Length: 483
Image (cartoon, rainbow, N blue to C red):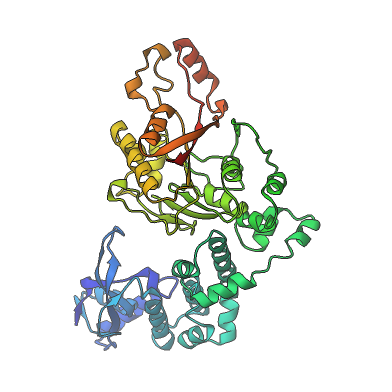
């Protein structure tokens, strides 16, 4: 016997759309005349999320007998007879599908049988959680008591989508320079299969689709891939200059790169998002196809997207976890610990960090709750972070590595008249230049990449003029080499 209050009903492994009130009432009535019910089936688990979804704990999961439990409760019973599926505790996180499948199997052979719709939903739920296709149509057919053909009809769309989406991820990571071993760890399939997918990928009819009048959005949807990858495949083997032309980007020849708007095709909507055109120009002038680019704070992924386009390799990291961006690895940069997660020495570091506290709230919402963004640091700690990072980067890169550092002046923007500003309260490009020099980097070029002034309203501009406040629309790319 087990105390009913110690049992857990888990909707995630319950194979029905809902509990049946009619069945519970019928069972309760049977209990009134002392009908003996078979024991319920349970399973001990660990790594089970608590009520708040945070800490992991232990639990007794009901696999079969929810209606009986409800009937026992109605009749005032405190305990209920049980049997256990496995005689040892299971890791809940690793066994959710087997638990659901066993629960479904039990409900197909006795009691209130699963409906066809219930079985279909179980099959689709399992298929959606099983991108590696470990649970074949035959296995699902046996457990759910339906034909293999029926299972195939129920889940064929999910399997097709998984195959294409998974293949797109593999191709994206491969183009960005990930090894097959690392891709295998990321997507959960063996290296031999990854090799087959990358070697047999065929997108030869992109040109045919374009000639029929289809746009790139249609083509990306047709191949079930993201737009940036579709563009990268379309532009493969073209020169950098040909790519600029195809993308509709004018190639800037001078040291002032004006890009008022971000190209929505590349990178996600993210705090501090920068134009892909700016990154493309940096790649054009300072790298060549096949070079490795390091993006330490990748944010919305515009750097890896641009590297895809221009056939550069890329390793990207960010404090925010990004399930939708497989190429961005979770990493907290703590230069004092001297941790350097990059597998190879990069040819270029493109570093676009938060501009001190300008978007503090937005970055806090994106960052890990337990690890603060550098935008929340004090001025002293913020500056120390860059000094330590520049030192770490100098130590772990090759003599020819170039550091492209994008940032903007931070002053008492929109609040203090120009004559009253205090230099010791600001952080300017001069400070970053000084830190680079102190840590072994020599600035070889300063490229102005101004922000759009249209982000300020007419009222804001008028108030600033009345108070003699000088606003900030400047943004500078410092290009440095190692000394």
